[in-house]
Image 1: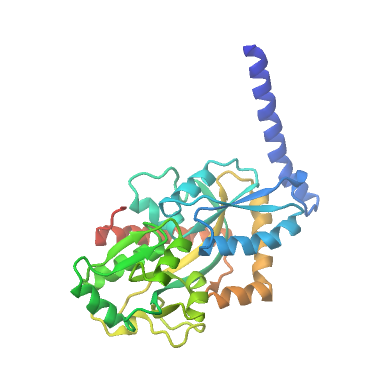
Image 2 (image 1 turned 120 degrees about the vertical axis):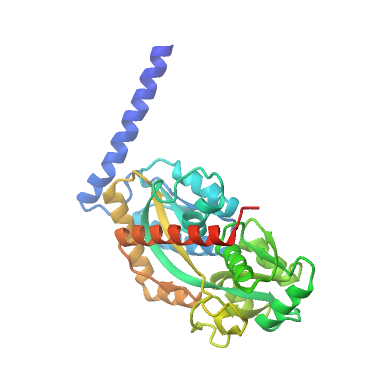
Length: 335
C-alpha cells in the first residue's frame, strides 16, 4: 500500500513537472493558446467592488479569449490584501495563477504586520504594472465639511477625531489617513473594512465621517453626487477632477509636500517559467494599450504605465523601502 502511494505521488509530480515544462515549449512553437485550455485563476486579495477587483475583471474579460481559455476572478480579502496574496504566493508556479498586487499587499504590509506569510518581492515575479493613481478624500454629500480646513477643524474639536473608513489596515487609504494625521498633528479614528466596497457605502451613508479612496472607486460616486470630493493626494490636480484641490493646496500647515500615490500591478508566483511571464506581460500590455483600456484607466484617474518586468521589480523595491521608512517614522501599527 505504501509503495503504491509513493508511486502515485511520484507520477503526479512527474506529470506536473512535464506540464509546466511544456508551457514554454508551446510558446516557442508560436501557439497563442494556454496549454490544455485549463482556466486561469486571477486572485484578487480584496472583496468585490474595489479598485483591484474592477481592474482585474476588465483585464480578465480580454485576456481569456487571447489565451484561448477562461480567466476566473477569485476574491480573497482580508488583512489589507495579505490573505489573498499569501494564497497566491503558495500557488503552483505554472502560469495558471495571477495575483492582483497593490501598494498595500506588495509594498506596505511587510512593514506593517508583524508576520505575513509571504515576501512581497521574493515570493512573486512581476508581470505588469497596470498604472498609478492618487487617492481622494471624500465625505457624504450630506456632510457639512466642504474643505480640508473644515475637516481638520472638526477633527480637532471632536474627541478621538473624525472617523475615517479604509479598505483595510495597511492599504493606501489607511496610510494616506495616517500621513495626514502625522503631518497635521490632528487625530482621526481609523475604521478598517474588508475592502473598498463596504467602506465606500458607509461613507456614502454617513456612518463614517470621511474616507480616502482611489479615484477608481470614489470617482463614479463623486460624479453621481453621492460623495463630495475634498482633496486629492497627488502633487497636482487631476485632469478628471480639475475642480478638486490637492492636499498640498489646502493651506493647512505641514501639508505642503503631502503626496500619496497608489498603484496596481499583476504578479505570478515566484518560479513561474520566464517564457510564461513574458507571454503574460506581452499580452496584458497589448490589452492595456488599446484605446478602450487607456480611456478607462484615464477615466478612473489612473496614469497608465509601460514598464518592463525588470523596471517593475526595481520600482517595487523602492516602494517597499519608502513605506518602511514612513511607517517607522509615524509609528503606525496594524490594528
